[in-house]
Image (cartoon, rainbow, N blue to C red):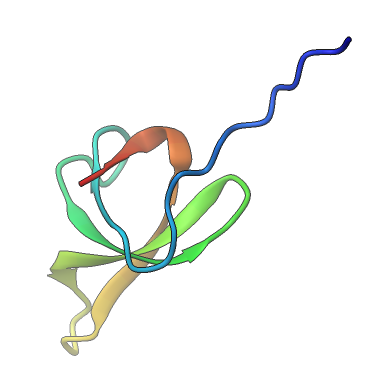
Amino acid sequence: MAESNEQVIDVVIGDRIKVERGDYKGHSGEVVNVHVNTCSVRFDDTALGDGTPFISGVRHSEYKKI
């Protein structure tokens, strides 16, 4: 029987996460979309120049659910 290398995705839209590795380490936010390798996160403490909330993709291996 072949082993599965699939990663279990344990977040859904609306969950809160804190980034532990990568470019956004230390930042937290709300999951706005879930993809195969990443999730899109609306960060709490980061905004664009016009005040629009900053949204970026974070790999599933780089955050923990809070």
